[in-house]
Image (cartoon, one colour):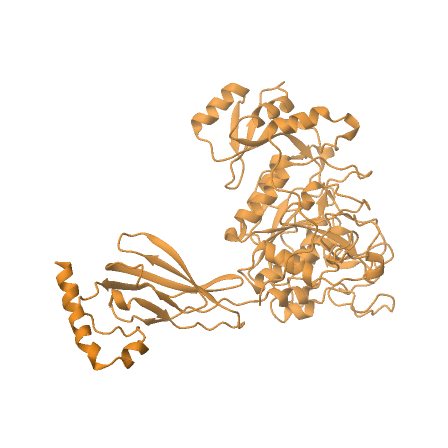
Length: 592
C-alpha cells in the first residue's frame, strides 16, 4: 500500500535555533514578564552542540578561552558535550560566549529538571476490563466502539520484534507480565538497572505505563498491552528532588540517546514539566536536539518516534515547545464515550487523543508493582488514568505499525496515524477542513486502521535474464531482469548499483521498466551489477550480483539480438544492396 497523503497536522516549529547573537539580543530586549519560565536552577555547567565533531586541539583552545575545566561527550553520535566550569563561574554568560563561536550550533546553561508523572486526579475505578482496547459497554454507561479497534491490528501483528523505551520512574524488572529488553538505564543512580525506587515520586508509574503499551498477551496472566508482542526498555528518569535526586538537561539527553542507540522504535514519555498555572516553558535546545537525534539516528536512519503525554493541567496552548518538534506525537486523553477529558492539555501541538480514565469515565487496567509500593496490593491496578495512560496507548499503536512495516519511516508513520484517526465528537471538536482540532488533534487513534494503512511486505529479489553469460558485446549491453513478486501489488521501480571497470560505484534509477540499456554509456572491461525493486516504502531485496565483461563491438558485427529491424531496409530494392555491402569497407578505410 502507498503511504498516507500529506499530514494535516499543524506546521511544526522549524528545526534548530537562532544564531547565538540574535538569541542574545532577543533575550536582552524582552521584559522580565515576557520571559518563559525556566525549568530549574543551573547546575553550574554547560551543555552544547558543535556543528561537527571537534578535535582535541579545538577543545583545548575553547577550554583555554572560556575557562572550561573539562569536556564530556554525551551519549549518542551527535557532537553534544557537557562543558564543566569552575566553581563560581557564571554559566549563563559562559553559554552566551560559547554560542558565539562559529563552530558551536548552540550552548545552554545545564539546568536541573524535575519530571513529574502526568496523572489525573484520583477517582475510583469502575471496572476491570480493558475497554480502551475493545469497548463493549459492559457497565451500560460507556459507549460501544469508543476504543482503539485493536482487534483488526492484531490480525496483522502483535508488535513482536519492536522495542518500546519507557522513560519514567523505572519498571518492575521482575513483573511476569512484562517482556523486558535487558535492564535498561537509570540516569539518576548512573547504572544500567532501570528499576523503580520505593522513595521515588510515582514509583509504580513506569510499570503502569509499560503495561498499557506492551503487557504480554496470550499468557493467561493479568492484562494485555496494545503491542503485546513488543519488548520494553526501562529508563528511569523520575526521581525524588526532595531527596536530592534532580536530573539535568544533559541527563535527559543521555536517556534519549541511550534509547535510540539501543534500537528503540518508540520512546514513551508520560511526564512533563508544565507548571500549575500553565506558564509556557522556554525553548530548549537540548530537548529539541534529543528529538532530532531520534528521527535521524533511530532505526538505522528510518527514525524513532517520540510519544509525549500532552499534560494534565488542562492548559490551552503550546506550553512545552518540544511537543511541537518533528517526530514528536503529543497525545491527549479521551474517555470511554470518546469525549475529551477536561484535564487534558489542548492547543496547536496536539496530534491525537487516546483512551484514558478519570473525570467521570472508566479507568484503565494495567500492570502494577507488586505489594505496598504499587497503586494496589496486587500485580495489577484498575485505576490508571491521565495523559500518562493515553500516551502509551499510542506508543503501542506505533509499535504495531513498525512491526507491520519495518521499512516505515517516522514521518510516514506520523501521517498514517493522523489520517486514520477517527474524527470523534465533530460538533464539539470543530475539526478544520484539513481534519484537525485543538482539543482532539486528528481524532481518537484507530490502531486497526493505522496498521492496515501501512502494513507492507518488501518486494522479492529480481532475477537476471540477460546477459546470463560472463560476457556481452557492447552493442548488446542491454541488461534485463524479471519483475519480482510483490505481496501487496505495489507499483515498482528499479535501482541498479553499477561498478564500472575503474571501480566507480554508481546508482542508476531505471523507472518501472525491468531493463537498463547501457549501450551508450558502457565501455569495454569488467562490470559488476545488482538490482533492487522499490515500492512506496523503499527498497526490497537485492538481486544476486552479476559480474560481466563488456567486450568491444566487432568492426563488422552480426545483427544485435536486441536491435529491432528497420522497416525501411526491408522494403529497399536490390539497387541499394550493393551500396550497403560497400559501407563496411568504406568505414574500415576511414579508420586507417
